[in-house]
Image (tube, rainbow, N blue to C red; front, side, top):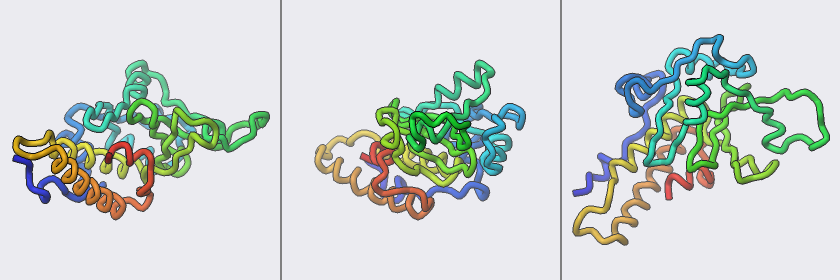
Length: 213
């Protein structure tokens, strides 16, 4: 029998008040965290809160198949001992002319992707999370904000993955149409919870839309 609506829908926990979402008993699992030292982070990653979060809590290097979350690019760099690469944000997001050879001043870092092409970029200066579309070109690669911070990103990703796993498959005796209607209702409530939790969550976000279909 499908779990009750209240059991499936639970508000995200607030980082800082319950940071266990990223610790041993976290949603992402024990031993999954990459916790770099200050010297292992690129100097171009200047946002103090992001640096503090990475060095004190860490970032999970595990895949979440339910939402097609894949941080393997980052994991390969970590395993190889290669410093996290800081991309020229103005170049990859089409904010500068092609013949502009001036030194880059704005940077971002790749922390994972969903579905192979929806890349999660962390703005190196202010720590906001941006959707970089590998299928786009220039300014068409900028698909807007995903979350306001790295802790918020992990809470939102973990919430969706948890909800999808709790919904599971359609139980016996429930028609496909009824099951899809139930999923739609649940995902609508999840959107409201996420929007209340993070002001950067956009209802028309392509990133979140593909996870809440």
